[in-house]
Image 1 (cartoon, rainbow, N blue to C red):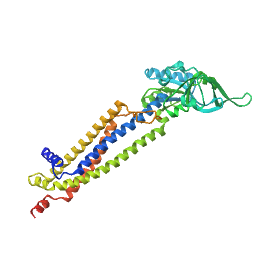
Image 2: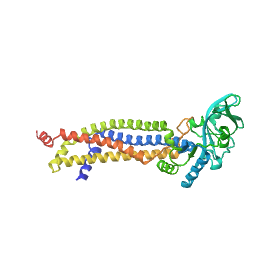
Image 3: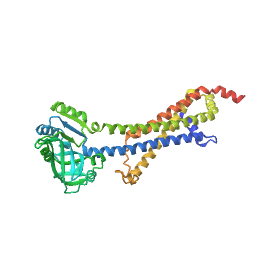
Image 4: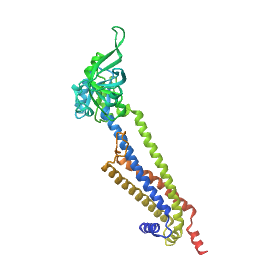
Length: 392
């Protein structure tokens, strides 16, 4: 029975002389809503993911910050971590904020003093010789540094009382210049060998173990709490350290989703209008089906199944075409971004979550408005009255 009704509805929409263009417009709106939502989510998700990946390559997925900074305790923790997770890259360092001076130029810097004897250099520094100082290009340009320059690192928090409280200073040579493609890192961070900073602070301290591979936060917390307690150290994931950025990216996604929900509601208003006109055109035919033995509920159910199938088909087709478009753009890698952007091509991220949201949002809204149209038909139309109107 349902098959016959569906065939009738489809034939009427596509072949009848009085077919309603509003329904075609509504179907086109659903197609565009699903496709554009998936494309925009994939583009924004790819850009956001690339930003986070670049930052995590430099700053790590997480850090363990020590309140008890003795090197012996840090190396004990490091040994236990490497035993538990032998394939994960752990790197001990001393992180300190200093002043960098080159002749008359001074800039605040976050110095990462790396213990190169206890592990390989992180990926972004591989192939470079860390003898004394490696600086990002933006920081070097800011203070006019060139390779081979003798640079002063000044610590206002460490002073010598000889001839008054004079801030301690260590002189290093600029060995190499590089870029991380993360602007907030390139303008403010630099890397040196650990003994240089330990000589500056006059202590053999290490205050951080940086974790460059992903480990479940809960597993790491349980392991550290069980072996070392919570008083001497603190675990901070990348997300914990960049809460403002994470919240801003989440807000961006929510605003985008809200705009598309509003757009889909506008499309659904068109669906409602088209359905009300469509139902008015076929009301006599529906009354004829009722006379032939079809119940009113079965007619409404068949019509609802038809609307669901039309919505499903339109949305799935929109997602399929969006996937083809994204695959085409990703394969040919068109450079559509300005030259001052790090990513000249949009790094699309196609995943199940984005496809599911792009499907469920337009489908749910179209389902709600279709149900509303059916309910209006139920209230306003009577098959007996329509038959009487024909006889009169």
